[in-house]
Structures are given as structure tokens and as C-alpha cells.
Image (tube, rainbow, N blue to C red; front, side, top):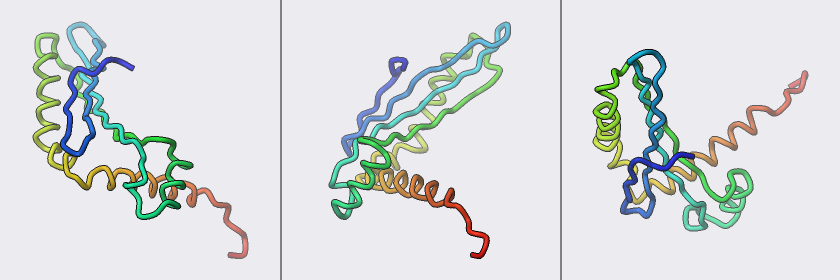
Length: 130
């Protein structure tokens, strides 16, 4: 993975990382793509009981990651750096409060666990008579 272009330490102990995956795709035009990532180690204090923690570790592994990609197409070479900075600034303006909340780590852990549990249920075979 590329080296992050910016890291934002959060008061809840996590770190937001921004990665630049910008590429030129035609002439003077670029696809500005910023990947935003936040890694959360799964620990017992994120869960109500030890059984939930063990289930999460079994289904998700030692950590979960928030991952978002923001893309802008057709950016001229002269505007690439400014666009990258704007994507980061906009994300921080609109989302930083949520990520730095003390409840965010627990919410992320439970959300990912519920997502994986839902996928497992979604693929249960259906019986013809019920």
C-alpha cells in the first residue's frame, strides 16, 4: 500500500489516513482518487461480553477498517493538487466529528460484525417446504 499523504490522529486513539491514488487517464485529464482509511484493532472493551468479542475476532480477524474512496474525473493537471486538498478538507469538515467521537470505535466494530453476520444469514439454503 502507498504511504499516506496525511494522517489525522483522533482523540479516541484512532488515526484517519488519506492515500492518493490519482492517475492521469487521457491527455491533461486526471482521475483524482483519495482513499480514506481508519483501522480499528478489535479489543474486548468494544463488546458487551467475551463471547461477542470472540465471535468478532473469529469472523473479522484482529481488526476492522473503515474504507472510503472519493473520486473526481476530468481534473486538469494544474488543478490536481488543489482538488486533492479540497477532498481532504471536505471530508474532515463533514465527517471528523463522527470519527473522533468516543463512541465511534464501538459503533464501527458492531456495524462490521452485524454486516458479516447478515451476509452469513443471507446465504443459508432455503428449504422447499418452508
